[in-house]
Length: 200
Image 1 (cartoon, rainbow, N blue to C red):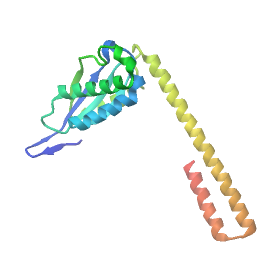
Image 2: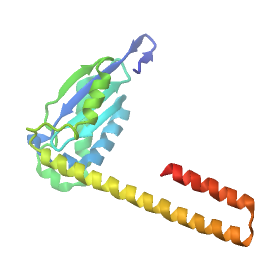
Image 3: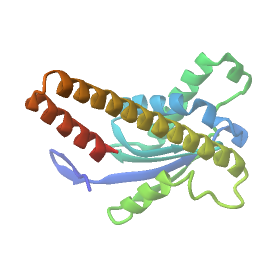
């Protein structure tokens, strides 16, 4: 738990916010990185900390901690929506055909010390524990498959690189042993091989 200390006060103000795009259109995943970047810039401007955030196709979950006792929650949401909308609509002119990017409403609940871990887990697992009746669950399912395939590809590439490095190292060890028979060089190669085995 993080408490903020000011001259005349000690406080721990956390809020779970949820808001969605106008008409709840499922296009937020296309702008996920831009939305997150815009939100973090807003947090600097409005003096609050973003603890957790997750972008779903048609809504956003965000857990914030206020660093000022005089924080106006409505103004924070207004800045989050306004700045992100401006950034996206400036970059993608096709989005200007919509009168507004975000819906004017939002959900907010205060988070105490006891429920902080729960809300963090809830936001982190949004794309894992998708409700069976969620309208856009197929989008999330395909996204999870793509992420899984990407992870497996990176892992296989990494394993191949390690095997290649180990083969080059073995070849170098054999060459050094045959030509120089230097026990110091051989010992160093053995240590490196053991480190490679541990890492795999």
